Image 1 (cartoon, helix red, strand yellow):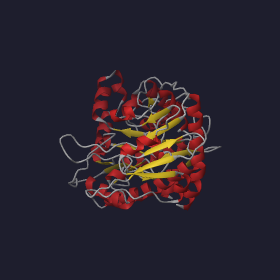
Image 2 (cartoon, one colour):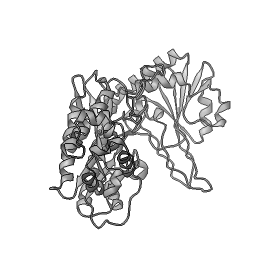
Image 3 (cartoon, helix red, strand yellow):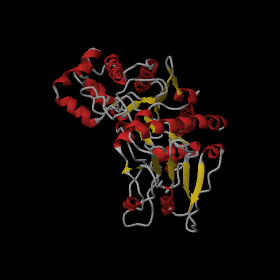
Image 4 (cartoon, one colour):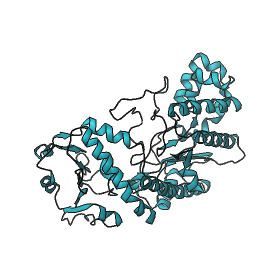
Length: 438
């Protein structure tokens, strides 16, 4: 915590410099960022879970209080309008405290409408956030201008030391949850019981999670974004895939691990091979690497596993060229991570919003940029036995190269994914996730 507080002032200076440059380039004088509103469920008086606008979170560690605003004018101290209503139905958020508060001007507002008087009377003020028609009379020059967003999103790829430390802590919290989840799996727990153990270990509730936990036993691991948590314990849990992260000051970790019940099984050997391949992919990370090349390398490594473990009788290059590997590995090898699990800017070629295309035949890759120092992203190769994709492969001309009896014997395991969060350093990388697991 002390280290985070020490790093925050330099982070704030970086935020000011980025906004100074972006506002100047787009002919704007001020920016007001709206954190967002709490929304009610249709035909109900209960709200959806609230998620803060990441543009506001990038300035201050306010993560769970709706109706806050932040005003910034180049050369002036950032001004946080912190919503603190008079309310006896719900407990209002406590006024901000902590070392970071001295670097920001904080004003408490009882009603979001009070923020209107803070919109500068002179100059052009951009509004960033969830738009409401009531804001139309507040005097904003533009709402969410794309040129401003492009510049801010492009630069979010480079994380400050403060942001990296927040993600380092988020990985440590997530690792605690993964250890607890593995223990309950080995004790025979249900998906729901594993999920609850994860929450307890991370001291998170559902709203704190950066994304919904993927807790998948057996065949459920073949569903990439498996969203359920079965309450009943399976008769025989042979495999367990967990994709679950944690949050700290609004910054996320994104971690995936896969486990086998029988440590002498062929599936365990496949997990070990995938873990080795994943670490080899991580070792490729250094400034100047084209992330698209890393994705294609992941396909070649998975193709090597398909050949070595006798699923496919072609060499690795042919397995990739004939798109057979895509039936077993249909998603991208990773994405930026930060204030959002799938952080913005992954396709941007420059500050103007020009984009870098995905490799042909790889529509689900979320990152196409050249790797540079200070960027943080995931590396998450996988190998799955997905019924719908295997059915398509079985109907194709490439089906004759697949050992279908062997493939069918692995369907009960669902699949494997190994995922770490990696920081690019001057001469290589730092693996935040492996360090968190010790």
